[in-house]
Amino acid sequence: MADSVGPELKINRANGDECVLPADEMRKDHMKHLDHQRDDTMHDGIRTKKFSLKECINCHANKDESGKYVPVNAPGEFCQSCHVYTSVKLDCFECHATKPRDTAFHPIVSDKMKAFADVHDAPKTKSMLDSIAAKAGEK
Amino acid sequence: MSEQMIDQYRRDFFTKAGATAATGAIAPGVMLMQVGQAQARPLDQKASDKNRWGLLIDSNKCADGCSDCVKACETENAWGSGSTDEQKSDAAQKAQWIRTVTLKNKLTGSEHQLPMMCQHCEEPPCVDVCPTGASFKRADGIVLVDKHICIGCRYCMMACPYKARSFIHEDLHDQSPDVPRGKGTVESCTLCVHKIDRGDGTTACADACTHKAILFGDLNDPNSDISIEMKKHATTQIRADLDLNTGVRYRGI
Image (cartoon, rainbow over all chains, first blue to last red; front, side):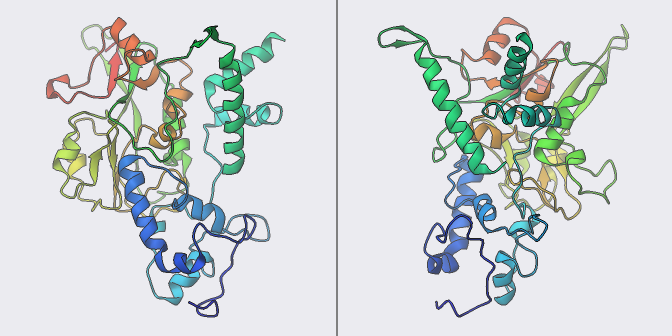
């Protein structure tokens, strides 16, 4: 398929120019890969990143002038522009998040985490935070 | 924080953890390894029936009026107060993955509270009644809803003895990337399956409980903290008469 066909896409090139497969293949087969990965992840817990929808969003969500993420299914955005052009309904985002989000932590954890993240390697669990806090208290 | 940064942090942490472990060598070739803790499964490996994840909840430790576990679940899984969605639904319609229940002994008047959520049964009634196969049990014992094939019939909600499931009545927009949820499907506690799969070795509720009333672990591993506790103390399954072999066990009820 020639690049001149279809709508002009807003492509975020911050993470490079290459998708996980050549663009031609992705245009044609992205839904097959997503569908396959969907069942593997849901039922078997396989969470490889190559065809993970979450990774698609991480790369393909664009930011507006104020630096906030714009949903990938908003008019003119990466997913939506082709799906409008081809008149194919986009079902993924009735359930899936349309933009990346920082890893969600409980507020109790995230406040402490922010405080420690600058000086330590970011702790992953509350027990790790507590042990760091205890050590800080001893000093 | 970006996903890449987190990966970098994790890599750094494990590199350092590896260096620390080396100091734990008790003899040449013999390593003092920590056993019984959840290990991160490689991303391309299937969840295995060698594990059975579960929770042990000590209702004597659960503090009256505390709802830290509920709030942590809401934040982690982006429902209730952790989401800006579900403004039109009333209280009975809104999602409720975990709730606190107060038990009262009418004879003695003693009252205590416990958190209640999907009990991750070995023989789940929700799976039995599901007409599409959307309700299923993963190899490692976690009971989930595959929302891709859920038709929203809500048979599972009727079948669940623990009233653990919710139906989503309206369009959602504020989901967490790790926790897809949407209108017309049923959902419930996932035992923080996304956290288990990335090797966090805990759930949001267990992590947030400052009273240490919730213990997460592998019921199949005799050396896990949860198995050791369950061997030491008498534990109860709620509605044990139904013979469902729940993955969530309680103490002090």
